[in-house]
Image (tube, protein in one colour):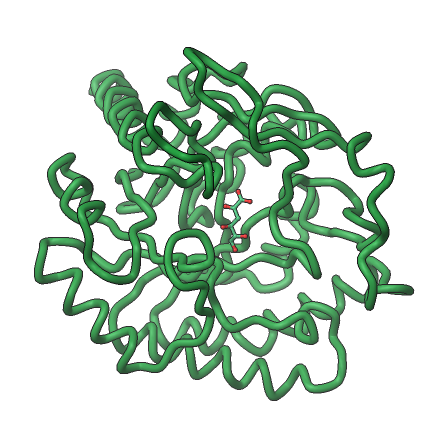
Length: 324
Ligand SMILES: O=C(O)C(=O)C[C@H](O)[C@H](O)CO
């Protein structure tokens, strides 16, 4: 069963209270999106934050994205073992504090990417978009010449071989986020986590509940996947859900309002309710920028997230009622 969650800043402010007032108890911490951009954590940092969140009734449910994985780990370059040891220490610290889910990704060089951030949408709101044609003039990212897919797969297999046993021991679930957009390359850098088949391969590398998926719904939609079928297929390996939708495909899409995209969101919610494990956090992602917001952090302003949580709660209620 999924439970609503929100990215919250790593220091208290009104957004913590807006979450609890809406009945959201699961906090996702991701300072690369909201916060100071940090990716390194000590046990004391995590424990302090956990205490702080608990004080206002929030559970430290996920540490997302802002985690200590370097490109030398993702590329299998020399020095990776040192960085993997850092990641193992981080996982043990998460386990000791009781943070159940760590979300990571295998996007080398460039993180999630859009080519437009001011696309007009409903009532003068703004959404983001990606169009591969917009990048025709962009130079290839430097430092990644000669990187190939086999190398990325070898590095991911090696990483999982090292860290999944540690995650199991620590009681932490790893959720691999898809490449966004899920294209076979971006700025000349190959990408591998771009399809349902790729996830089959990832899950087979280590058949463990600690080796799972961050089911970023909009990316699965951009892959052309049937969302309820993909939810059922990956079922109890889904550790964390990003609730969002896109109109288009991996080469060209617009991020939609959550209630106005092409995906049947009620059917999707029914699938989550029916198939995923207990207590799986689901956060809205890439929300529209609304009136009074300056669009300085596209996708992560507050008002659209409040709207999305209300919409998710309504869908959840309808899906649960259908189960009875
Ligand atoms: O691309 C997106 O939709 C994301 O949410 C990106 C994630 O925050 C990040 O890559 C997780 O590791």
